[in-house]
Length: 385
Ligand SMILES: *Cc1c(COP(=O)(O)O)cnc(C)c1O
Image (cartoon, rainbow, N blue to C red; front, side, top):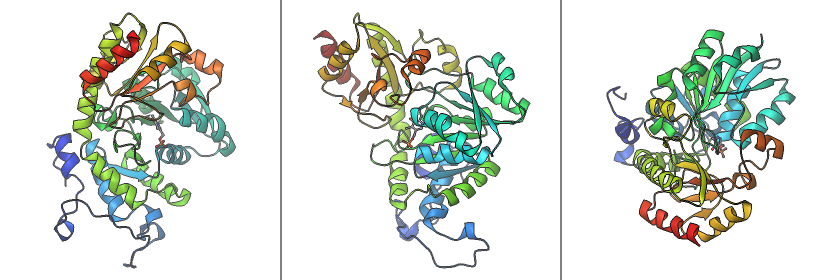
């Protein structure tokens, strides 16, 4: 058992590790076996089988992930979208309704707007920064409220404490996609959220080499999600589980460095004459900087900005930089740069993007672990030319 007094850095290394160590192995071995010898398990869901999410590699991750967020339970999944879709298909039944933040990760946005209806489920978008408006959107069949810790790509910080309060008052399940903050910067269970969802593809794994997801939170709900996941089949393969386990051990050193580096880059960009605007919750100019300081231990490694000029200037800057890789996704050790209109948010209509404030010239940066001074030098040169 993890002692509650242990700090996150220690839990990353020691929580969930097999005791005694398997054959003395310091690193958790990979159990690459689809099925396991029958051991008098009483029901189908307890049979050891990769799809049933209960091999030794799964169980070690479940314990480590729940310890990191001080939660009762955790479940790893085959991708972040498997965690999100399976959770929504567990919390909601046909005829139910969901309140959902209006600016979401593109895949989640598409799943909710294009797929939920086929299951007989309905949703209403809410302004997650305006709790007074939520009561009006509530319906007798509303079952859940769904938000993200920091939105992509504008880094808005919703009124997370009001979400928890509203859910408790109205008997809703509160869900937060905590991918952008990672457990280093925010632990939803500590603030009363029922479920925290992750794309472990991003910070938790941190090395841009697998897709994986997680559902972390109240035991009773995580059990229900596992039951549904067992049937839907979005389980994580043991080899990917091993890579995630290995990547997570350095989560704290990576994310703390990325917090600092992103803040320095945000300040540099904000002070540069060629830059029109920077979105980063760590900047005093961010409209919810005070809230972010109150809730988070760090402001994360993602920021977005607009240069003066248009799409052409943005594209020119991207090709002028030499240390960044132009690619979608985020949370790895490499600094990635992208225009959301061409990647993460290309699924949204032009009107939706405009309504949400995602301009065509907007650039998103996922800061890696290169030397910050080298990145600033590279950006300075790319902006000057
Ligand atoms: C990437 C991402 C997802 C989806 O995760 P996959 O692992 O790609 O399925 C969900 N939410 C957020 C915030 C993400 O960044």
